[in-house]
Image (cartoon, rainbow over all chains, first blue to last red; front, side, top):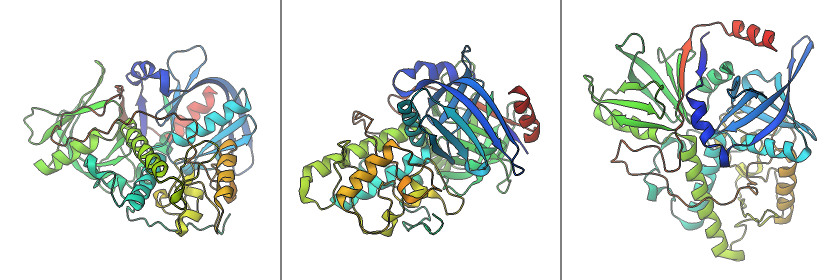
Length: 170
Length: 277
């Protein structure tokens, strides 16, 4: 099928300018483990610089300014693997995990937390919750004053119901 | 530069709700005619497909730090997506009528991650104020957990008891329908919990893992504990619908990104990637 080529060079200078507050800059060892159905396991460990910018995780060779790759952090699952390691797996390819080893337990926790929050879908859910809750408590829709209460993305049920998920598999 | 293309394409076509869809004419880069494409806006990503029923997008534009403006064009109902970089390509688009044009311009100018983040922070702040003002008199109004942020509140709804998939990072479980149904609350267990238990759950989970939706409920709660974040100033999101030319939102830096799809085999890229490791 088709493939996106992410033309990045325009993005980066601007992203650099915004590093101060919004980007976590950590040295992580990146270990990529590929699981296959045959249980062949190929492990490659590389040390990479990792930068989180909005919902993208960029990675660099440690001595280079330009990233070599990026991961869009939507539709993914972030898990703590052990005290210093976390993983990212994408839902369409769940058998494959990107592993990240951090320098400390605390750092690992920060990364997991940040990556969880670095998704548009996550923010959307939060927003819907806050909106619903504020409405419940005050009878007012907080988005009305901003004139955005009709936007599709802010709707409580986009054809989706506030219903319980199937917990039986857990 | 590499990207997790397959997962990006998956995001485009999965069942998470798009923010806007429709036909637009897009001016080509090499062939400067306008081509009619099917557009799908999800979050800060604007995907476009050759046909409405195409299985995969042919391109995506990342809408960070762009401005969306009306532009002069031989085409009617034309507008442009511009980035703040001299080298960046300008995406010229045209809608099929005035209403569609206005609607798209509005949607695209507000599609950035930062805009969403501002809105969320603003509502978060409002909710806190409401909860603090109500004090303890509101039953279950909030949990003043160790992080000092009354985030979650009790609800009778069953939705509350099912944390899981929906609280985890950007997940849309393949088992269940798209994720936005349940609120991002920490109280993930079914049945009743005391507020105190909830506090424990929230703080405990925030330290640990908290995200794998396939794990047992206790591990799933996450989302809510933004203990780390300090309060953002309450900047209301840009809303003046009349100014179609307005930049995205105050404080947004300008990112410029260009994306084009090329027809290459995914497998080929994977091989390359593996070889480079």
